[in-house]
Amino acid sequence: MTMTSISRSQIYVLDQDEALDFYVGKLGLEVNTDQDLGFMRWLTVNVPGDPEHEILLEKPGPPALDPATAERVRELLTKGAMSGWLCLTTDDARKAFEDLVAKGVDVTDEPTERPYGIDFGIRDPFGNRIRIGQMNPRA
Amino acid sequence: MSRAVEESNRAMLRARDAMDRAYAEPLDVPALARIAHVSAAHFIRTFRATFGETPHRYLQRRRVERAMYLLVQTDQPVTEICHLVGFGSLGTFSRTFRDIVGESPSAYRRRKAAVAANVPSCFTKAWMRPSTTAGEPVTFG
View (cartoon, chains in turn purple, yellow):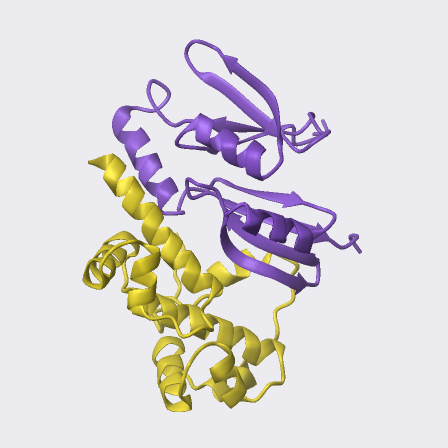
């Protein structure tokens, strides 16, 4: 048995329209699937040209989570304490940083030279951490 | 009510992010409270309720964490590191460092070998930060 790929990951967002404004409008990701399944809105995005790797932008709530648990998730998310976070790569981290700052995103870490490349941190509107790196080839 | 908590959480997180990002600058409570759009007194109270410590203490731990990093990763003099991480005086820096880490900056530098691992710096910054319970043994399970 061999796993071959990480195909879908998930993060919680508080509002899926606002998530689209951020992940597509500001970060430049593409909508992969936006479908009303009735019981939920299945909303996934991917980096441009890579539909094989999707991120599900899920809204916490009933019936998947009971109302009290959903409230707790929302509270942790807005504190920056939910596990949801993403690492994305780019071919020019400093340029990406400038573009995103111009679009008014919240910055947590400015671009830094590291052994593995240049990377910086931002936050999505809900509290999720996003790390964007221009990575050196793996040794 | 809970929406108000969420908005407050995000405002406090935004101010905390500012401390993580701009720790070397002369940040003060009024400036941070402005980022969170609340009064200074409200900011201190709410930040503590949200994250379990005062903004001042959080900023001290952030600065000390960066100092620990620079002490191990660079050869810069302690006085220079003190200013690089945002402390105004060597006395305050040394006292705060000892208070949080349990030993002086130079003793820490002598004892600590560099840790090399290619994990994203957001992780090392979060996990290498000295805890508020310095000195207590780490227990598992």
